[in-house]
Picture 1 (cartoon, rainbow, N blue to C red):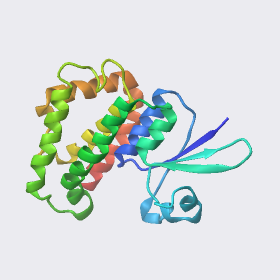
Picture 2: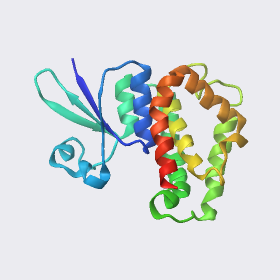
Picture 3: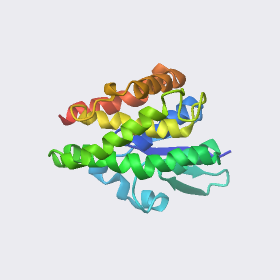
Length: 207
């Protein structure tokens, strides 16, 4: 049986998506909170698992003692879910190629540089919110009535945008709000909060 060890930080949406999945599926895992300020992600041991020194990173330890690292949250989610559904992939790639970079352009200046984002970038993120909201108009989740890894991945990015709630307020998108609430209920409030509350606290501490 493979043993799982997950390296993560609370602020990373992909790491939270993986943690949500593991808790939802009741998969046993050792979790290690990485401290970037101490260089935890640059140690020789960590770089053997992930030469890109990013999180999340999932360490797979096999019964014979050998191990390997899997990194990039969407790949980790696909591995854990044994998912080969091209419809799920379409949303994961939309998430990676369109939602993720536009979220970053708005929130990262405040998080990492203590400065305001370029307002010229905001319409691109609004466009993605509008597309997502419209896609959820008549469906519970991204692909119907079944929660998928695509929902987990995109929902965590949407949560991160609320660092800039004054610029893009999720409450202006009722279908997205309902979708987030559906995910929260499906995962379970206690499990959701155990992952999300440290993130919310870290964002408050940054202010």
